[in-house]
Image (tube, rainbow, N blue to C red; front, side):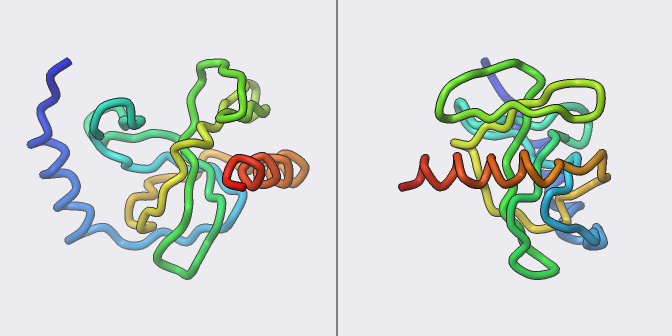
Length: 128
């Protein structure tokens, strides 16, 4: 599949230059402009290349670790499924990434504490 990276580059430049940093906390679920990525990395969708992400770790008011989500039900050591609103979302643990909070567009919910603790434990086992 051919990808046109020029539009994402324009969006990324706009985020860098003009976006005000979002106020965020751990356990929150946001739509973030993750972009058009290479190969099997998870892409964002739509005009602003959005994908839902979990805020896993807030390092300061500017940067965070996030984990991208999918609606596709997946099982295995690289995935963690949990309820989000009236649907089930699956975190793609292998695609954890550091992002600037300028990529965060709007909050869509919170992950409950029990599932958040479980996802952190599963991630620790994956990285160990």
